[in-house]
Image 1: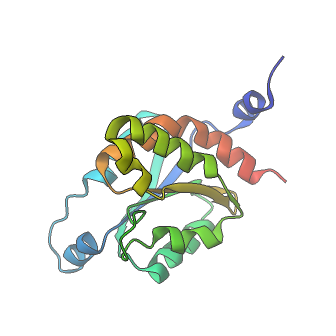
Image 2: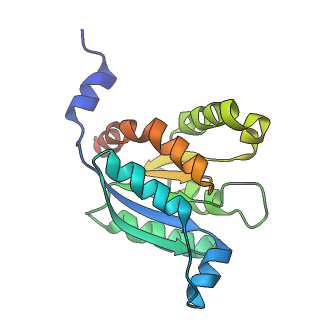
Length: 176
């Protein structure tokens, strides 16, 4: 007997197109001044995504600014060549961490279990500090949206553990 989630996985696309945004005021300001910016978290994300057979169609550093984050999200939601949008950074508890506030209102459905699972896995590595992230995921306009902490280790953990579920998530987001 095939379970529903197994059937959905069979029907899901095998190769997804990702749009990645690093949300960081310091990196954004350095970039706008023309300074070189070494975005290790973005590199980690690209490496994991491509190793798993998917592609990155957009990557950008943006400011910790609600309006800019929303503008970029809306732009990606309108693109037909994007299946998954990932925001890296701005998920903590500092006043400047506004990614969740910017993105959550656009979710048609939120996948609360993603954040719960991520925090559980993080706890196994970093202890109680895992409770300080507000990492989350959801769907909108037939796309999966993930909001991840900015550390390279958090990006690697989230993507390595969850990337194989993203085709299923996108499939569900596109169902009537």
